[in-house]
Length: 245
Image 1: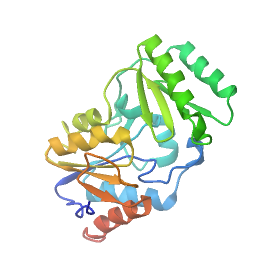
Image 2 (image 1 turned 180 degrees about the vertical axis):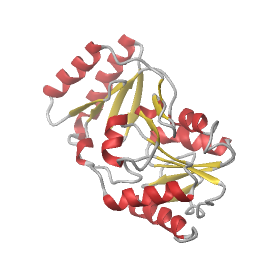
Image 3 (image 1 turned 135 degrees about the horizontal axis):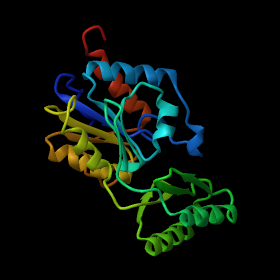
Image 4 (image 1 turned 90 degrees about the vertical axis):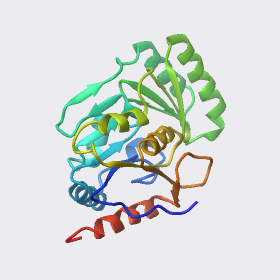
């Protein structure tokens, strides 16, 4: 699979995942913090794309703001359950999880260190990166909870997440594309995880393309980049092609 063409700054709209795409995956989600070089790159990308830049992530909105600062106005959080439009308007597409679901996940984690729980309000993630041997038990436990409460089970890279049924990342791309500054442009989605596949699908359906970052696997993306460093280089090259870049 080849690398992607350079972004067309007059035509494309860019949708980017965060972890594993714009920043390396860390042992714990909270280990990822603000980065001045990344912030500068995102600021410049937003400018040269006329504001048609959105971060589409599984993280919660507050956590994304902590990491990104004020550099990205348009954000889809919790895999699309929470959407902040470029004008600051926030839409939520699901109620908070039942209290007993969070309690059950936290009890499971307490009994099996070093597993961790990441409570996002609209979803809760069970991370087993620190102990991959816990994968089968974690997924089985989460599936049992999902079945009992009518929730969606969403697997990821060394994580399983419980969330209410609702739009995914592809739905977020489609929603953003309906209004300025995204409408009339061609979507490009860059991501690394299984949760990004719906973003790749939607970008292609709307005439654009997807870019997968990291190890090769079956994917709906049309192009690939080796790692986060390669992804950032690709974005830097696109920014550098702008007047004054």
